[in-house]
Length: 109
Image (cartoon, rainbow, N blue to C red; front, side, top):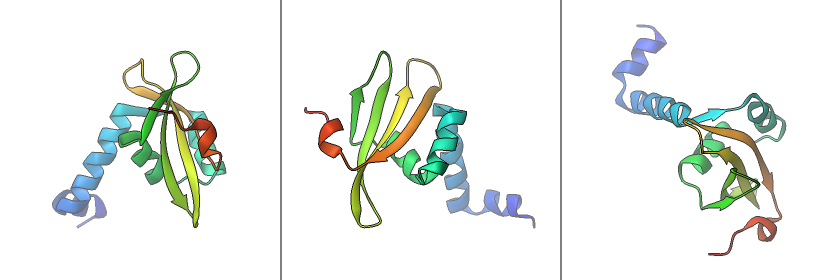
């Protein structure tokens, strides 16, 4: 049995695949963000987690919003920010980065 068939018969792998497909439908990653997460060493799984369950969503410039979450990366606390245009469907992730300057970006409730 080939690996694609194995995925379809393994419930855990099938659920992971369907979740991944759902994320790609709800969010479109721009070419720029794909390059940046590689350059900035942000795992795709971490970006997906921020998009799906952000600690905060705060307004950015114009129609853009920052989906952001605090995350321990290599023993250091970072704020992972995904800048998103969610006025379109599917929403477009424009860029993403991580910063230690949490206080600067953390929105007040």
